[in-house]
Amino acid sequence: MDYCAEMLALIGKLAALYADRVRDSVVIASVNDVENLTAGLGRKIWQKITIIGALEERSS
Image (cartoon, rainbow, N blue to C red; front, side, top):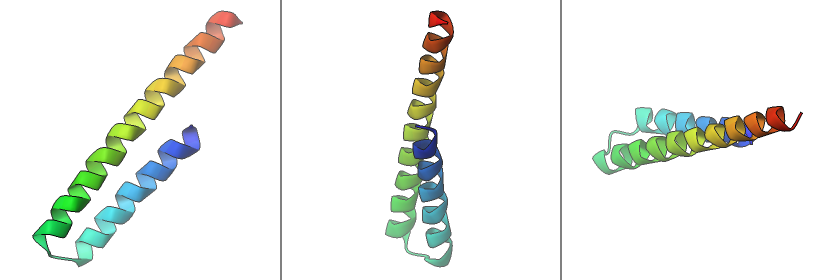
């Protein structure tokens, strides 16, 4: 799951780099959507990692 979160962060950064070179308002809006989506998914993944870690500590 950790690798998934890292991959999502890279996708968001790549989208930002792409938007930096393109000045089309539709592209910039789409890139903002991609960044928001990847950030939200990354947060959800880290929540799951935290929950799994807490469950593993309880069972030990």
